[in-house]
Length: 299
Image (cartoon, rainbow, N blue to C red):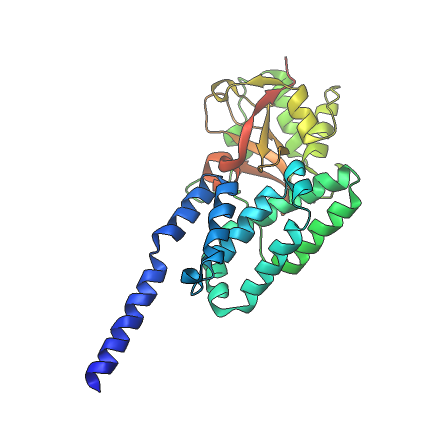
């Protein structure tokens, strides 16, 4: 009897350990981090079709997570019209399952990043007047991610808050210095979808408004600002230049650089979670992983 209990306990321990160290699941995580979303979805679906992996909710989690990245691409979404609904059903099923709840808790940062991506996507859909798509995405956020906070790094790597005096230098050109000083007047202004004045800004509304103070007219959308700007290398970036981000479906966010040339890049931007703030890009895994490039409208 004692021997049987010992063997059963040993079997259960090995099973739990095996679930935590399944090579195939580690690969799903690795491929997702490398943004191979189609590969992740393909592999996860194979695991879901294989009864061998029925003991784990990990394939379901990564199938839903990869789907939510792919569905932000207009072309992919047209060929997979039910993908968003299917991903929502999978996430809701995970939240009702004890093992699924543990997986969600262990990947809370991934889901927080997803929420920020979806907020940016919904914002773009609203500006493009795609009401049906916007409502579907907003419904997903409300149903699945509403209780999750978005991630936003507003401090240096050592945890101390950024001080304007640390990122503004007298050696900058007058025009660039004025842009930064004008932008920093609006720190704390709330984020508002399609906002373009001091009562509330979205990301491109903020950069457009700041540049208007210098008599420069910028396109309204972040992607159009990127396309119209003069592209520059990171080593040449200086205050007043713009920094653009891509969440996997195209340029979806823009900020204005306030750091000196050659220093770690710090931007001021209208964050969907905190309004107008300063963010050190190198200190934020979220922004660093989505960096698209730099552009300028300053001569």
